Length: 367
Image 1 (cartoon, rainbow, N blue to C red):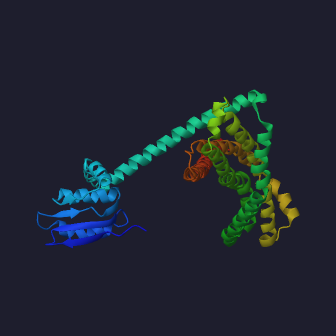
Image 2 (image 1 turned 135 degrees about the horizontal axis):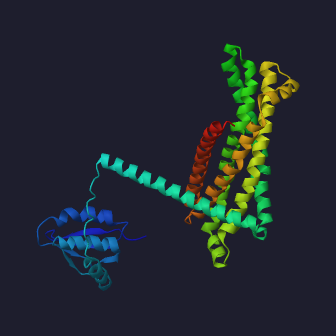
Image 3 (image 1 turned 180 degrees about the horizontal axis):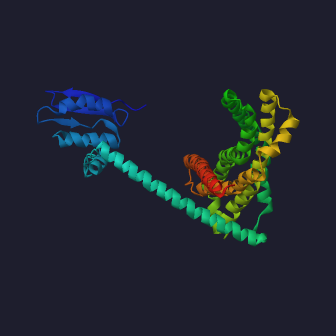
């Protein structure tokens, strides 16, 4: 253990000695003992002959004492070198940070937010264009495709997602059915609940819930996988070997999800209609046979087409945004988590925005 510094008063108290170790662990005690003494008369001296340990913070403290007029005597040669080095530094206090008014901070934050949104939009447009170009080139030249990677991604994003998609579709149908009966029964129109459930599931809720689940499940997985590869410099290794990461990492995921999401949406539609049949049997007393006979009069092929038409478009954007943020990872675990969160948020927001645009478009087209 290092010696603790001790102060020795000699004679009239103007000459003092410092012995032991003056380092960062003992500096606080030495400062307490010597600061008041250093403000005394001008003929003060501090003997350092018995000081056997000195580090940079201790040397900086002694330099400040010397600047106040304290004479340092008995300094060892090794300590003198350190003191000359530290005392020779041009130490200046940090400039005072000017406070920014709160209204100015608000304006700065608004401007920064607008700039970030603009940059995000440009990044999405650029990457989506690149993904579309590479995907189209791979489809034109089938020898560039990677069937093994595509099959793995189809299994992970499609087959393994069937249970959660089915449960979610049934639950959504049940919720819509309960709310429909509760709102229509006072007007004697509870039989229209079947219409409400069937149309909602086929046109909107089936594909929308599926896309949101896929964005949170598969889109985040794409970002995390590519992000970890980025932290391990595997993406840079692909570039060094002359292999384009877009062709190896992005295209198989995009094609796999474009194939998977329409099938998952169709599965969600079927499970949603089954949930509608269960709620009709439980609340309305409509048997499954009567339910099936009524469906052709309630929905048409246009309703199924609207839902399935949106699925591959949603899939393309979800996969592209997930891969884009995976390639943006900067090399740390914190960056992987941050980019994964951004990918999921942007994917879900874009799915909702596209769904709203499609709803307006199909309404104008009369579909």
